[in-house]
Image 1: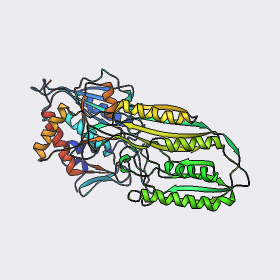
Image 2: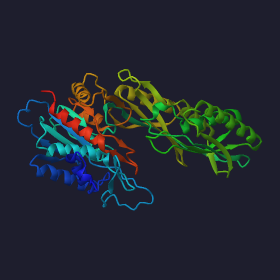
Image 3: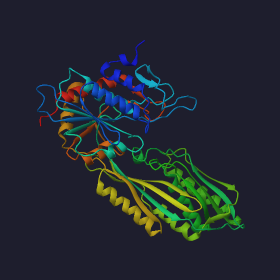
Length: 485
């Protein structure tokens, strides 16, 4: 039976087999960092571990290639620790139980760590090779990418001398990532003014469920429903027409996810209860009709519930409702340089209340730094007018596609020569380390490539064996044909 370390190309798979034995969940990366440092030192190469846990290894050019531009091959050392509920596994101490499943390598009930372990393995294989012809090589292995991009954010200028960055974190063979969006969080906080709930009112739970949700960058262009928007669309009409009061709202859960569900308790005078039910049904059916092709599972439900002790003051309810309903959401602008690609978007991800405050959270993304900030301040204006305290935090830069990239043109030609077809170019409306790294090393000509990995961040993660060979062959071609300085 073939073992993982014996799969072709063995240069890559033998290294990945080593990585499978070393626990490396995000924020528990000491062992894999020690392994990487030892790997470089055992080869007699200059090896650095910086203050934030990044590992840098430098390899001189092979004879006759000294005049080529310096290339940094970059990947991240950490992996996402996810497992099935019935699987016993300690990600901090246990190795990954990987196995070959036909055309794929996968793991037994856990994430595999091919994201970004295969990319890291290819970088180490280049360092260990005595046959690849290449110019000066630098390998950058970043820390804690999956939970904050800490390594990329903490990388200091002056540690690397490269002219070209090859990021290895793209997960579709034959697709070149040539740009990614930056982001910024917009958080609006209202002081929750409450009043005692009048016992003459009846209470109902309004539930918006069944939406698909999805990644707020990658899926934002699909026109999916936003549970917060649907909830406040109904509340605005119900408040204005029937005097409905809001007691509580719990909408969305993650800042980078399109909200799938929203739940709230509303109060209405009993004599208007039937009218409320009819209004909720009417708007619910209208929204279902509008979204029928993308959200067939949408459900809008109203059911009687226990009367709460307090409800939101009418003035706050009106301001919150109008602000949430008015706030821009979804795609705001498409890219001029990458047709069919979203340039700028925002996702009204969370609206939640407690006894002290009501918080609305939005994540703005854009390839353009100025467009990102413009949209963030637009949201700030909407919520500020409603009386909220608004904070703009967590800003990270995007990677603007460079249609004149020298390494892109070289790699496109090499790919077509080897495989007989043009690669697909992709600018991701999500964050890659390239944006952050390129803000520190502004001279870098950047591109991202990789093998085909399916279902990363889940226990179904798997990497296609054939595409690893294609990716490796293409990486070798690229290094042997790097432009001269």
